[in-house]
Image 1 (cartoon, rainbow, N blue to C red):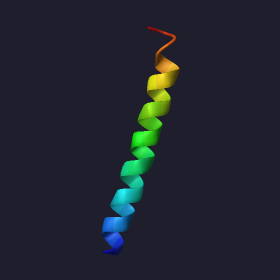
Image 2 (image 1 turned 135 degrees about the vertical axis):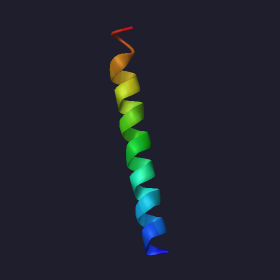
Image 3 (image 1 turned 30 degrees about the vertical axis):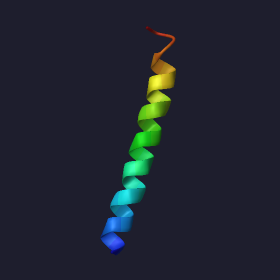
Image 4 (image 1 turned 60 degrees about the horizontal axis):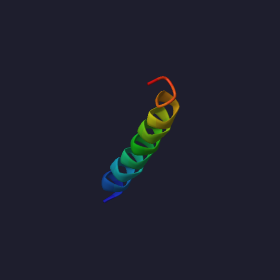
Length: 29
């Protein structure tokens, strides 16, 4: 259960970082 929560949080952080990188990379396109 605890490990599952950590994986969930990590997944959310990675998703947020990817979105931020996507937004930052759009102007370069």
